[in-house]
Amino acid sequence: MAASMAWTCGSLSRHRTRLLPGCLTLRKTFHCSAAARTGGLLFSLNKRGLLKDSFPDTAAQDELPRLLQAAPQTIYCGFDPTADSLHVGNLLAIIGLLHFRSAGHHVLAVLGGATAQIGDPSGKTSERERLSTEAAEANSRGIRESLQRIFTNHELHFHDSSRRLGTIDVLNNLSWYKGRGVVEFLSSAGRHFRMGTMLSRHSVQARLRSADGMSLTEFTYQVFQAYDFHHLNQIYGCRIQLGGTDQLGNLMSGHDFIQKVSGEEVYGLTIPLVTSTVGDKLGKSAGNAVWLNRDKTSPFELYQFFLRQPDANVEGYLKLFTFLPMAEVEGLMEQQRQDPGKRLAHKRLAAEVTKLVHGKEGLESAKRCTNALFHSSVQALEEMDDEELQELFKEAPFHELLLEPGITVIETCRRVNAIPEGPRGYRMVSDGGVSINHNRTDNPEQVLIPKLHILSNGLTLLRVGKRNFYIIKWLSL
Ligand code: YSA
Image (cartoon, rainbow, N blue to C red):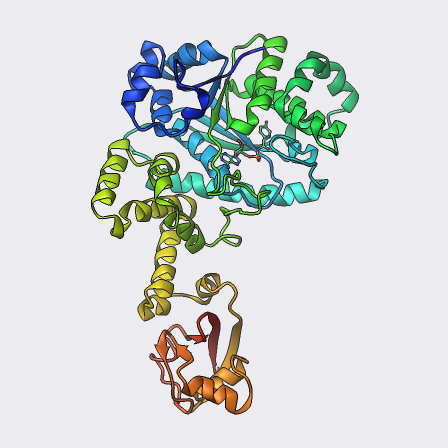
């Protein structure tokens, strides 16, 4: 069976390979061919901290860099549609693919419409609930849309147009399993899989030790991912599969299967798993998901997620999650060290990721929301439409009210049930507990003034106490 190895081979242990500070360490430890040394793609990905393991070991160190320099190659990564959106953990795999595309290689993003119904046991402590074909298809639509949006944003905003961009295709593995008979599949593909090897996979071992064990369905997962690799190799000439380190066993199964059925040399590359500040893998199962679809995580929330990263993460994240040249990352970090209060590196990180995921408009929306919320900017509020305002104040009730002439502050508060009835509510306003469009309003009888209390977009943001927001959309009589 093929061995895997960490990219920084030599004397460094695997666990120290993740965020290496710079080329000096790499030059000492990165044992590679002349092809890779002369500015190869893998070398630069490794420098960014984007590569973790590769296999088979020496082949990937020597042959693969040469192959990548000789001609455009085809690389794939799979995404199981177990939810209707991808999350920031998956984004790193997408970014990995995009680096290959920028270097002129062809990229296949595979939606696991079939494999999602089997359920990948990798990194999971228990079996997923069964996913119906309909749910997998609906989820695939959401994911396909966000993949395509990110690919377009990358092409528009991040690709150096003087370089030839490789092609990109989004496929769904349901298309090659549909109508395939189980007897035929097991009698042809199945016989190339050895039980001992399958049982030795970390994902299987971990589950066999758990109280619930593992179902046959989950156990066969690696067979399907291996078969996909073979299928893509046969149809698209794909020789490289990319995935997070949790996918290593599945990647190896594909390598072994292809060796047996066609003897083709293929390669696996893994990227590091991004973890939260408490060490959980960023993803949806950990309950801490930051999604890539706007209806689940708004551009503003995504922007804030990166803006709020601990200082210690920023340099690594700039290298992993952005396409900024390394020299620019180093320059930004130097500026940040000289004036940490400005948080230039955090802001750039948040802006680059938001632009990649939601485009220029998404980034503008995120900045508008930031100004409206944290810098009390009335102008920013005025530039928002009601959808964006609702995204910003997710928990805030949204009311549509008829704009009657002479309507007062207290009447407005009462209509949206923002204050208690009677004198208590009246006192809340007169004591200064209410603000409208970021301006404290302590006269309950004040008649609402257009432009001040009612913005030109027909909206009013009412705040009662510290954090109870109400959004009012005024309808003309
Ligand atoms: C792969 C190949 C196939 O032929 C068919 C299906 C698949 C899907 C694969 N088995 C899987 O379940 N992937 S995933 O949907 O869970 O995640 C998609 C990719 O994002 C994987 O490569 C995964 O390792 C990566 N990923 C998820 N969370 C991550 C992460 N990468 C870095 N950090 C995280 N927190």
